[in-house]
Length: 76
Image (tube, rainbow, N blue to C red):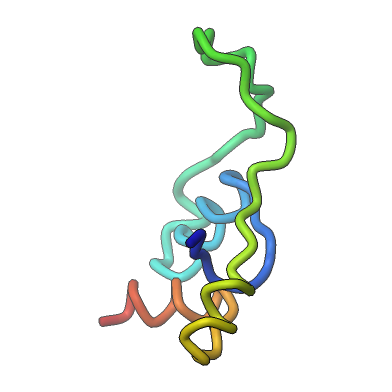
């Protein structure tokens, strides 16, 4: 099974959300860069979103939205 929370999010969006939740958004500047900035040896796919519907259907569990779970994780 693949598993991730509901919704699509980029690495930049998740970093910015973490900074906002933790109150550090104003003190840290994060910029967007292309994948080739990192000089990775393997080519990366454009879309790396996971689809968790098979997991959710098989185990009959709802999957929460990523922002809600991130907030819960960082606040606990």
